[in-house]
Amino acid sequence: MDVDKKQDIPWLCDKCKKELVLDKVKVRYLEGNFEVELLKCPGCNMVFIDEELATGKMLEVEKELEDK
Ligand SMILES: [Zn+2]
Image 1 (cartoon, helix red, strand yellow):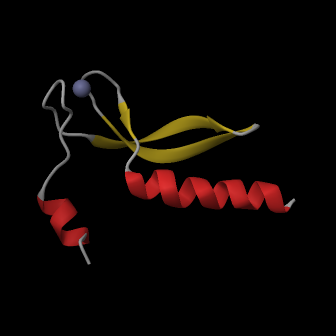
Image 2 (spheres, rainbow, N blue to C red; image 1 turned 30 degrees about the horizontal axis):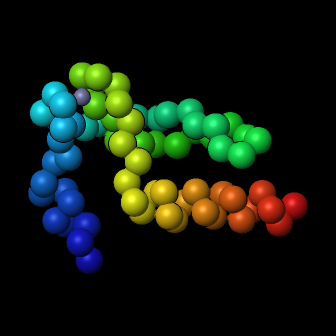
């Protein structure tokens, strides 16, 4: 629903004002290592984790691990 809006407005790094790029980032979460695509600033390499990921995918990952 708001996907189009997101594409129209590129995400910018607060510091560098550079457009963020999608890049595969290795994250450690709980006891595991995961590779996820996250928005990253090409200038300062800061990784942005949006709310959707923080409250969505990570929770799914957590649930999968707990189900074991
Ligand atoms: Zn930056």
